[in-house]
Amino acid sequence: MPRLSRGLRIIAGSILLLLTFGTGWIVAKAGIGSAMDLSNLPERERLFSEKMRNISMVGRFTVDGREDRPARPDSYDIYSVEKVGEDRWRFNARIGEHNLSLPVVVTMRWVDDTPVIMLTNLTIPTLGTFSVRVFFYGDRYAGTWQHGSVGGHMFGNIVPSADTQR
Image (spheres, rainbow, N blue to C red):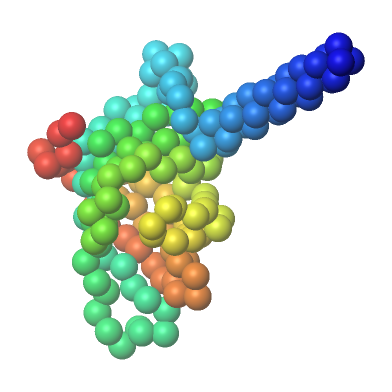
């Protein structure tokens, strides 16, 4: 009987260890948790994070195969953008026509002074799976998007927004 009890404790401990590791891995991949301190970021990253606080990305998007139709209005309200890992950034945003507020963690890399979002097959619950390449320069953004079999271009301006106060 003591051997059975010891064996169950080892199994339970192993399961607990795996759950702890798994939870930590999920939290790290999802970018949940604390953001890096702004004062410790390189200047270009700090300036980008400060610029992207309480703004709206207001523009238009196109749909491939429908070039004969005008570009449709598009907007994203950004509450804040925080660096959460080496190339990982969390955009706390309200997304377009869905009016859904949520944190979205993306890979973002820099080409000289230009930040570029790179998402490949990211599933956002209730919205679907997306691939995106978007760059920011000055007060503008532009890029491509893909949602399942539908894709196109997106472009617009970055403007201050009183509506994004949290």
